[in-house]
Length: 475
Image (cartoon, rainbow, N blue to C red; front, top):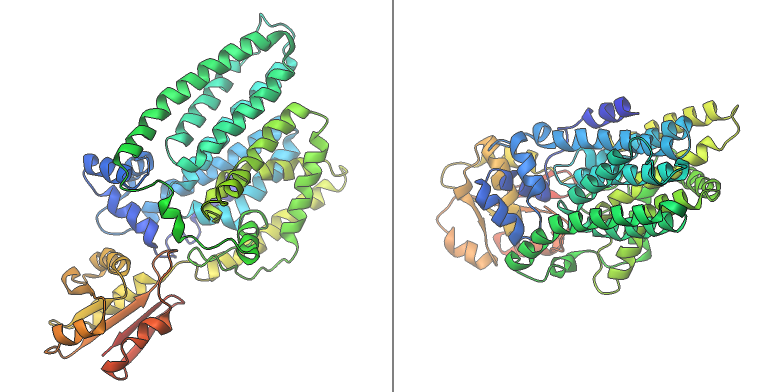
């Protein structure tokens, strides 16, 4: 599964352009280290991932190199999922869980994303692997005075994974709660080893908190607004939006990263089959309540957190659920392994083929705005003395970043609040270029509303569209 994961993540790694969040990564990674840290904290983010990405970045955009860490981390996550499922049930369970994780369009998308989600998912899965091993080792130990072989490594995996996840993204905080609930279930069935287990757990939690709280305090002191304030731009929670998120995360449907619109699926019902396997896996795991608690809490912690927080702020987007997919695929792998032995080869083959076919639309369809094409077009056609007007500052920001690649002068990029300013400012110019497009997931004027403002300029001399989200007009 790990080799398969690398293959599907390297395929087309640089085909899709960077969108706003990735360009923020690229720009921040090029700052001096002190400015990088300050900028991250100011924007309510830990600097961990951005410090890592500095080793893979350059001043001029290179999509392949910038996304390389996520590709590698995504493949490691697949390996960890396979190891967890093998530890919990069997090699057959590990094989299927790894294949599903490797071929998930959602996982592939974020394995080709220059953001920190693959990193936080990898850390949580490392911690989960350690926690599963702790639970299993306690169940096979016969003497509290002779700890099982390898237990120190399991505790280290849990501690390092949890510290890493917490110091990358705030959305990993529910993992700390989930792992403590799981440990409560482990302690309840630990018998004579309970005292030693509680002592070790108390020590690890102290280490975790001591390494996490300073960063939280730094974010609180440096942030320029309420940490939840920036979530208000997210879409309202409607049944349609909930379905699109669930489908993208758990049902093997690729989606547009800007609008969350689902792309066509080539294997209808494939995601439902995976869910059925996961439910079967949970049912089969009920014979071991401790391991069911460990995996189950890891699956439900983030969805429940989002449900609770969304009563105040709508924060339901696919990427915030990313670390819940690994344990979900572990359950699906266990479910597949529960099938009759003679049916397993056929089922595993069908899942691999179905997953590959279902992944195909992700590569073919546009999932990120084509600002690379727009920047190249403007660089080739805008003449000296002409100006480019963008619909908002973020459009100017993204065009400027891609402009460096295509030698588009940043000085000609401007954002204006109304067209009368343009009429006065550019009255002597022969040509004005107007750019409209979506850069990120925020709410903006529709294309029709924005272009209506330019009616006074008459019909444009040309109108060129780049994909679904970007249009360039020449007046």
